[in-house]
Image 1 (cartoon, rainbow, N blue to C red):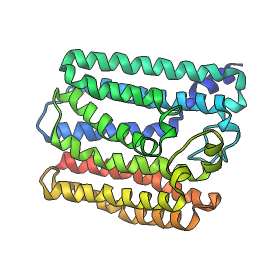
Image 2 (image 1 turned 30 degrees about the horizontal axis):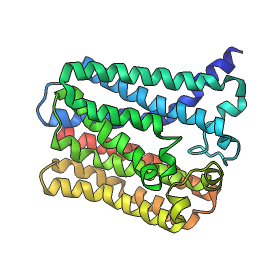
Image 3 (image 1 turned 90 degrees about the vertical axis):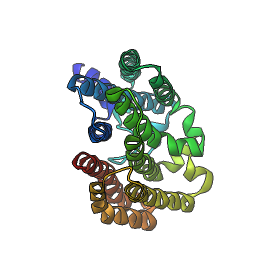
Image 4 (image 1 turned 135 degrees about the vertical axis):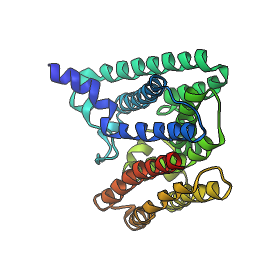
Length: 299
C-alpha cells in the first residue's frame, strides 16, 4: 500500500527529467558571475528550489491530465515519451499526482513572492508567465502548434535563466538573455522529437501540435532549424560580445546534434530505431547548456 502511495506521488515527478533544472539554473548563475555580481548561496539554492518545483509541477499535472483523458492508455511508451505508466498501474491513486502538482505549484508561488519582495516587482511578469505556462500547458497549450512548440523552450530558456539571474541580481541582463537562447531551442526540440512516437495517440486526445497540424516533414525541418539556431545563437552572441569566447565549447556537441538530426530524418516512423536518437537529443540538451554555463563562468 505504501509503495503504491509513493509511486503515485514520486512517479509523476519524472525524476530523470529533472536533471535539466540544475543545468538551466547554472546558466543564470554563470551569467550573474560573469557580470560581476556577488552570489549569495541561500538565494541561489532558493531559486533552484523554485525552478525544480516548477518542473515537478508541470510534470505531475501533465501526468494527471494525460491519465484522466485516457491518453496514457493509448501511447506507445518509450524511455523518453508516453508518460511514466505510474497512474495506469495505480489508477485509484491518480489524485496523488494532482496533489503533487498543486503543492509544487504553491512552492513556486511562495518562492516567487519572496524574490518579488526582495528584488522588486519587475520579476512579476516573468513569474506570472511561468505560472500560466504550468497551469495551461497540457489542457490548452498543446492545442496550438506554435504554443506547444515554443512553451517548453521558453520555460526552460528565458523564463528560468532570466528568472534565476534576476533572483540573484535584481536586474535583467544581456548575458543571461543570450545564454537563454540555447535551452530555448534545444528544449523545444526535445519535446518535438519526443512527440513523434505519440502522434496518433495525441490526435485521438485532441492535441494539435506541429506534427499533427503540418506533418512529419515540417516537424523534421523545424527540428533541424532549431538545432542550427541553438548553435548560431552562440556564434552570434560571441560576435556581438554578448558572451565570452569560451562559450564556443558548446560546439563540441555538434556531432551529436548531427547524429540526432540524421536519425530523426531516417527513422521518424520507426519508434524502436528512433529511440537511440531521442537519447542523443536528451544528452545534447543537458551537455550543451552545461558547456555554455562553463564557458560563461570561465569567461
